[in-house]
Structures are given as C-alpha cells and as structure tokens.
Length: 499
Image (cartoon, rainbow, N blue to C red; front, side):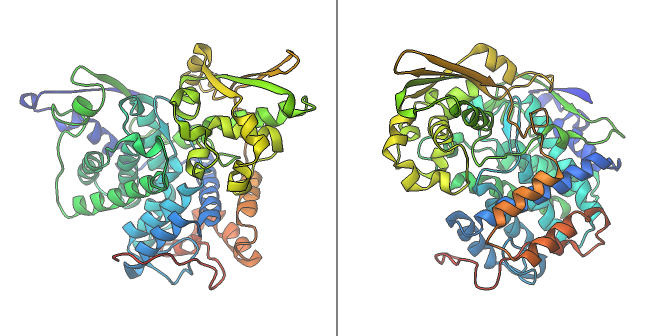
C-alpha cells in the first residue's frame, strides 16, 4: 500500500489529474491485477450474507416501496430484484435502488470502522445489477466487488466524514463507481470522471442517523448505488465532472470536511498489488449497530451471573467515543429511551439493546424489536437504568491502526440493589475475525438459512447456495442465477407512486 497526501489546492495551481485522488482511485480500479483466492472466498461469503438479510427484509415497508418504484422501470435485458422471479428485470440503477434498500434495511450485513464508518457490502447491489445487465461473468463480478470494497475501506481508513455530520455514503458512492468501472474494464480516464461525479453528488448530512431515524437509513446506500451507476453511464458517454472533486478550492474537502488547510493520508494499493481490503471487514451476527455486537455477546455472558434482574440498580457501559455519542446516552436523543421509537432508532440505542440482550439471552432480527417487546414494563425499567460513558482507553483502542489491537466493545459495570457490583468487558464480537468464534463459510450459510427460513423454498435455498459458491466459474450472462425468489404471490405490494 502507498500513502497519498490529499489536500486543497487553489484553482490557479491547476493540479495535474495524476496528482488527484480521484485519478489515483481510477488507476487502482483500472489495474487488471488478479483477485486472490481468499478474497474470492470472502466475496462469496458476502454475497450469501447480502442475500440473507435482503430476503429477510424483502416484505418490510422500505424494501416494498423501493421495489415498487423499480418495477416501474422494466427492462427485458436488465437486472433482477430480490424476491421476484429471475424473469422480472428492471433497469440496473433501479435494481440497485431496490436491492440496496433490501440489503440495508435490517442493518445486519458487514461493517468496517476506522476514521469513519461503513457497510462495504452496500457495494454489491449496484455492481451486481450492472454485471447482470451487461451480461458479465462471475470472475468479472468478483473483480468489481474487490475494487468496491478496496476503495471504500481505504477512504474510511483515512477521511472522517461523521465529525462534519456528513453521511458515510460519501465514501460509498465513489467506491461503487470504481467497482463498476473495474467490472466493465473501463479505461482510467472514464473511471476518473465517474468517480468525480459520484463524489460530487453523494455528500449528504447525517440527519438520516439522528433523532427519529426513518427508513431513509435503508434507502441512503441504495441511493448512492443508483447515483454511481448513473455517474458511470454519463462518463461512458464522454461527459466530464467537477474537477478536482476532492482537492478543489470550492470542493468537498475545503467546504464540507476539514477545510482549506486539511491534509489526509489515503492508502491505496500500488500498481500490481492485490486488492485485499474486504478481509479487514466483518459481518454482523446480530441485527443491530455494529458497536453493539460485542456488547450483546457480553450481555449474554453477564446474565448468567445475575439471579434477579429486578435487583439491578444501575448499569454503566464504559466505551468508545463513537458508541457513547452515536448509540449511547451521549447522543442526547430522547428517542433512544422511548419504547414507542421506530426499529431504526432502537437498533441505534445500546441502552435498549443491552437491556433486551440481558433479559433474553438471544437476539432476533424481528422478535427483539417487536413493539410489544420494546414496551414491556420490566424492559423499560431496566433500559432506563443504563447509561454510557466515554472511556479514553476504549476510544484509543477503537482507532487503533493495528487490526490485531482494534476494539469495538466496552467494560460494563452492573450495580445491584445490595451494593455489590458485577464487572466484565469484551473487546470484539464473537463473530469478528479476531473474535472468539470468527465467521466462516458455514456461519454465513447458517445465517442465510436462519434469515430466509419460512420465506423461500428449500429447493430455492439449495439452488442459490450451490450457485453462489461456484461464482468464479459462472459464465457470462449467467449472473441472473444469483437472484433469490420467494414463492409466487408471497411478495408484498405497496402503495402506488409516480412510477
């Protein structure tokens, strides 16, 4: 990997494109380096993971609405939609919209956390939609996905968006455009323009993850995917972009991020270097914000030592800055303590999550968020006894550059009514690559079977799992077989819109 300094330049400097971050991203995307075997295996895992969570959410309101809009853009040689038969095809940007929303809805696919936050599995729906439409092969898809993960994770390692209240799709959209460029084997010049357009149109605020969190949290990455496909399409037709999109004196760094004196060090693979960033990311075993994963596992462990949860007087979670201020009491969001809050808000409340995990000893993507479950009187009592506090040491460990020292958990103190205290800590979720039980292929398959149970037939389940595990050998034009369909008439239909 090579570090590239990125800073603002005045227009009169006429920064050469070869020195611009967007060009360097495009060069990585255009590099025809082979994808290594362990990366290919992980891409298969993440395709299984995405399909699992997409099918589990396919009849939830946001996924239904997104699919309804997509169906208004039918295209005979287009891309497939999760849940629908493979013969149902739509324009690729709308497939990315619908499938990306379904993938993101339950907040249960993969994650990477560093200077900023990300769910790099959000790269897959638009790249797959274009691959299906363009009739590419499994190997082409693998190359495109490897690039998408690489670029997003490299940006997330180095450029913080959230402290400026910019949503993380600003790193996702250029990564998706780069991945599509790799998939289609486009020249660096074309990818460069597409990446610049993608950056320019994808900077949005983090209000989507604040206060009363709405379904836009699920739509936002899908919107990025749609924008990325449109950006690549325009660039392929010869259109240019605002340039330099990162370094310009009126561009994103100068006015939306650290300002005209900023300097970032962005790591990118050198020419001929394999794209391996996907191996640094990690999926979720539990359907909740990633910073809650280790704390859920810790709650399961601690509950075994508490005879009567009604005797709990107070719970303090000592954790990182991010956990405290985004999903903890440091967010100062009353909705995070409200039993009538939306599912999207509850899965961003570690107070609620820890209370339910402590009581139930299990976590379920539907049952754990049911309105009746959230409103239980004993849960509300326990929930309101929980607070978070930032611990500088946990913040330091959260931002470790050494992956073997990273920590996303915390230390929990449970004070009982008799004054006794139970204390325990957990740095990493069990499913993390460095956790107690790292997820492997069998775990991804088990997650798929659990999430799709009762929704798809055994024949469809077996067919998909057999097909996806043979991804590298799928010939051109056969990627529609990666779709997963519900039985006829089991797909919900929502309210009509314009399309």
